Image (cartoon, rainbow, N blue to C red; front, top):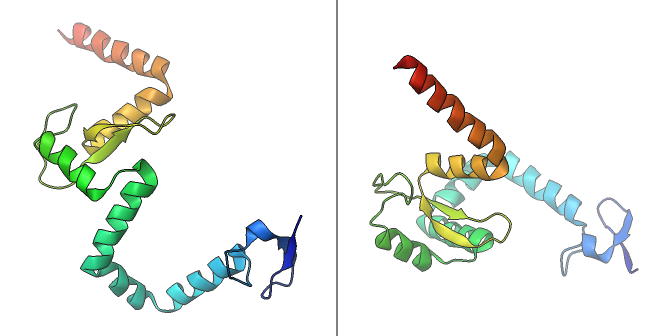
Length: 143
């Protein structure tokens, strides 16, 4: 295995612990970046607030997490008329991208409440079934 010595911490590490064309390991690089950001929080806040960076980061995150572009998201939003695919409430702003955590396949757009609920239901279907029974039982008792 190819070992490289980090110029910052002076510890020999495998080559995959380094970014391409970097002489610091990823850990040292991360610490240096965070130190710089923490020393100048106003610069980081201003950088993130720039409209071009917001659009870039939105597109980057959609691609990184779901392998869709902003245009794909906008087409889904328009096709759903800005409504959550589960509860049907209409939203003027963003909806969550509903997706299968095992396959990564994108389903539809959901509001935050429905997205969290689906995630919880998928994680433990038996608990979800028990929760439905609990609510239904107490509805019958209250009548």
